[in-house]
Amino acid sequence: MTVDVAQRLRVHVVADEPGDRAALLDLLGRAGVGVADPPEPSPPTVVLAVADTVDAALAAYRLACPAGERPLLVVADAFTPAGVRRAIRSGVDAMLRRAEVTPAQLLAAVQSARYGEGRLPYEILIRLLSRAIEAGPVTEAGPPVPLTARQTMVLNLMAEGHGNAAIARVLLCSEHTVKNVIYDLMARLQVRNRAHAVARAVRAGLI
Image (cartoon, rainbow, N blue to C red; front, side):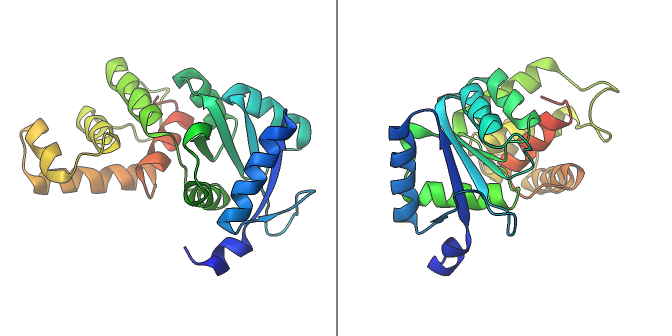
């Protein structure tokens, strides 16, 4: 991402602890991202909520922005599948683990939140998708176009970082078949990447 793109992004930081806010403001400055205080209506300011847990970050966001309806990035220490599901259903666009945040990661997450692309911690992707597989196929209460068992398995393997060849070996099929499954999966969920796929599945009740 170019510096010019970074400078067009604006972030408003909310935190329970002043030290947490100062640390994130420093990282944003090093990433070349501007700060908006208060949030600006146009273009929409990304709100960055930082706390120990996802739920605490959501609470801080609601206090600072009671009207909601702003792109939201959560930075927290603890992530649980239940907390992540609640966050996604509450409209969180991206999440990062605080201990692993670098200026580059923060910049990418701010951009993901700004454009609604979705970004989740790697291990949470795996745990969410594993639970979806254990739960089995969705019922009529699930998404309008439910995923097949094979599509769900491919989604899980993609989240673990496997390429098409490895996925084909696990599923005992050809790479061509895997490519077709991925194409259909992304088309059904109308997504651009793995994190976005998981977020869409959560909102639809699949996970």
